[in-house]
Figure: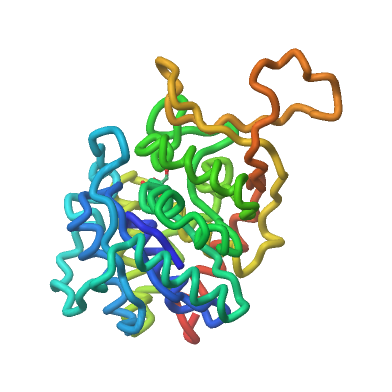
Length: 318
Ligand code: BDR
Ligand code: CA
């Protein structure tokens, strides 16, 4: 299940999750982030409709962060949040359940079936935090969380913080805390690896030759970022976190204590990734060991991850 703020790169992630034969996309929840919630929901339904995944329920979630006013990223993703492609309004409707209810039902159904769900938040974690607080016993039944957010050494929204965590730091802190309390494994696909899987102008030209909705949409999304950033290569962004599920060996992770900075004049929203050796004497540290032990992605085989996306979006013609 994905949680998204679609978003150009969330759309790339939806394409991959919807179409890869090794993945079983059960549901999608939406949250305000890159664009206002109404745009996020429309964009998400547009992508799923274009690739024929009308079977995937889409839940409408939080329009704003837990504490702060929303700050969108339309300067990156376009005024409609998804590259201003002028696509028709989708015929699909969202699921009648709220995002937290859809999360609850999807996690419970997977656990009941003996195949605990992998939850992939690719957006501010407001929905996931609300789910953790409203239904803690169901949250505990998640198989694993792989989230795009944070960074050990790299930031984007501010000099200290990555956009998804910056947008709702309390939510990220609640989710990490809940993972620690309930023993849910967490993987952080952060900015240290996010920019490496690149799709080039040449890749886009090949996608354009393929007669499928997925290939055409994938090409249009990536070339929007090529034009916007005047670059011949663009990251597939959030889609890398989904690709990692298919080829885990393409990413090197380290299990490390992680906290979210909630105060700080210039550091609010930073993920504090503790790379010290805790077998040494760190008794002087008044903060102690962070409860959340997270598999932090530190290195990536970018071409391999990008190739997974290109082959999936390009279909058999790639
Ligand atoms: C994250 O922020 C959003 O703009 C992207 O969709 C991605 O999830 C990167 O910092
Ligand atoms: Ca996103």
